[in-house]
Length: 335
Length: 215
Image 1 (tube, rainbow over the protein chains, first blue to last red):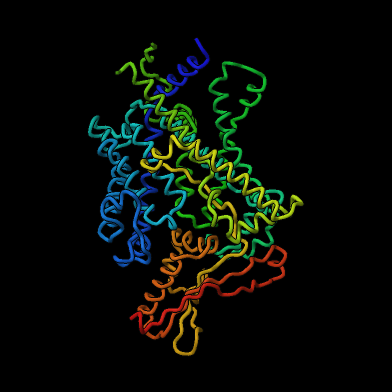
Image 2 (spheres, each protein chain N blue to C red):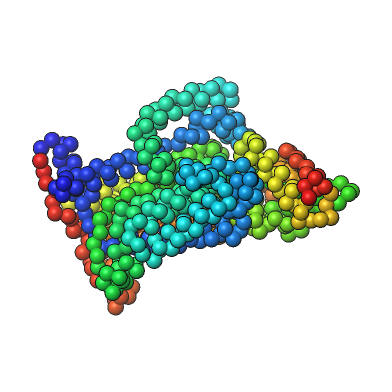
């Protein structure tokens, strides 16, 4: 068998794996709540009326709207509010897990189209929410912790198995986000050439900070360390994937692999991530970015790892009942 | 069909993975002429050339040349995925705090009750000038305001300043004129901040609305 054919068989087997649905269900609920909060906040703060509705409808700017919005007649008051209500309804249905996969696809497309009406008011978290909904559409995350599950089985929590690949792609997506965010920090202030001073300058700019930051002058060395940690941490994101691959292929042995697997590099990486996101949350107002990012973190663990963790901290609550992790589809036919 | 399904799924996942990885390659900003000419970009390039000991213009020319080649490669790499990413809303653009402002531009709104512009109505983080604070404190409006400092001022700024002027005239009936402007200054360094240096700036891009016409 050629190398390519062998690789392809391995890839098909990998993308055919199945696992308990509860992890993707938690993620579905977390992303749904972030989307709801983002939408409600835009509507109640006046951003929707002023920044997303065209000037002819009372808004501040001349806006044509995104492709989908244009298809419905452009960024007029009724169209934008129509998109808002559809996005909100789809997000609520996705959160409670009612209506199968369709609400996830609708939430992805309508939320994305609404926020892209004015790209100048759009944040990275908007793209993350739209992408998350889109990938969840393929996942079967409604199989547990949902009204759909309750309708089918009269139980909210089931031991249903779903495809694992959406979780893997979501992990890859967050790694790509962190890595390319780091790669684009090309200003010298993020690097030793600029004295790792970036966070100091971020805190001097009134745009994002939550409160007066004059005290940061005295904390300059601390901010230099924080800048260095942030930048190198972002650039190191792909190492987590390497570590996860090494662990997955641990049966191949090797001294370096054995040494690297002695520590849970992934857990350390995510712990630093939690601390950085908490720092952002406390000091900067960047909307639900930290909540959206942290929603991805449990996906780095297999469901059986989380079940085992839950057992350790609370023996009586052993998760959703299934500890089965890798249960592939019937093997693919080979031609 | 059932036998082919695992292969189709594997092909789709591979396509999605490649789409994410290639579409995330920095592109739109690198190829944007305006982005090269912002205050921040010029400062970054000057700082890099200074730390590398090269002439700023030569360094800028070399960077532009590399960027042109890079954008062409990126175009070729992303070609199979652009339509998919665009139609599914899964475009990848992840530049966050790439180049922090060292010369912020604050949006200020000031009123005139008939004796000149001496009524501060809105300034960021100023409790004595918080007419629009609830609106401007929203994270989406912070992003919007911040972009005025990073990018060249265009039609969007004019439209927004006009809107703010008209609305402020309606909200404050005693005003005869409203001025919207960007207050630009150089952020103090850590030592200056320690010495209590207060940054001195200047107003730029002033737009004045006459309330008589606006009401």
